[in-house]
Length: 78
Image 1 (cartoon, rainbow, N blue to C red):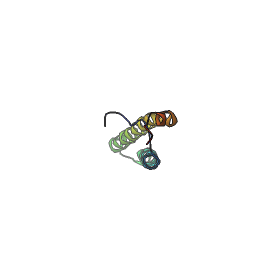
Image 2: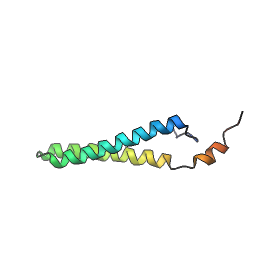
Image 3: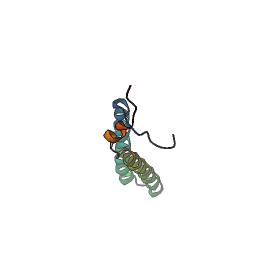
Image 4: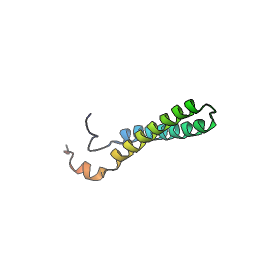
């Protein structure tokens, strides 16, 4: 899908909430374990993975920052 949908259903919102939670948790875990690791190379790799999860979290959040009520007005009513 090249662009996010105009409207988000309740079920979609639940999936997205879960995904955001998982990404945030992965970011936090990577940050924690990168600090705990004594090998600088491994610490850097873990930190890089954490930054990737953080980027994905922010990108998903950006896509969700829309006005769902306005989008619903565009959906044809049956």
